[in-house]
Amino acid sequence: MCALLSKDLTESGIDPAELRVLDVGAGNGIVGEELTKLDVETIVGIDIVDEAAEAAKRDRPGVYDDYLIADLTDLTPKEQRSLDERRFNCLVTVAALGFGDIPPEAFVTAYNMVEPGGRIVFNIKERFIDEGDKSGFQSLIEEALDDGTLEFKGEHHYRHRLSLAGNPLNYVAIVAEKRTDLA
View 1 (cartoon, helix red, strand yellow):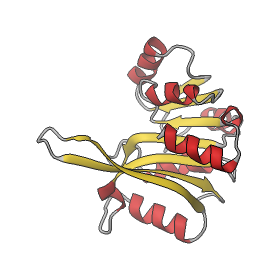
View 2 (cartoon, one colour):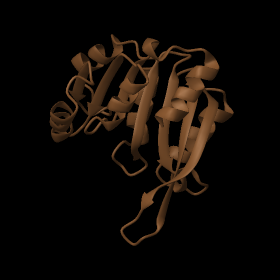
View 3 (spheres, one colour):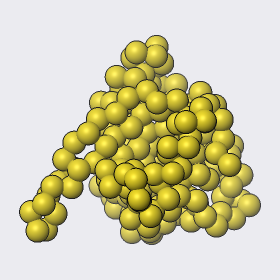
């Protein structure tokens, strides 16, 4: 994910140090730590699970400028202000879309916090962007790309891991540029 973002930043002439990243579903901070290796200086994590923040603070102290425990589908006015004040220009979410962990409504809320021209970086299981997907992500992503809300910059298809049954779980990583807010 970070290599795909790095490639796009290089091609676009964007200094990673200028990014103000919102790491949605930040978990224990693995992605935040990888972002710091790209020289990203401002990273805010958000997760809905208290234990995630505890793990990030324990295992990766100093990676996040702030780490909020909040529900993106039900932000308090204080949480909303705190996030809006950051003026994010990059959203990253890894391995959390499509399973109900981060529903489309939460993704839209986070997406709309990113300034136009910002980067949207996510991965998703391929079946969640196939025709017939019931999670809501296929139509959300397809419509955003079709109407110009989101400008595609790059993708990488890969085997994320094997299931417990030994079957491959195929994902696609996507980097795009936000043009406008999602409705």
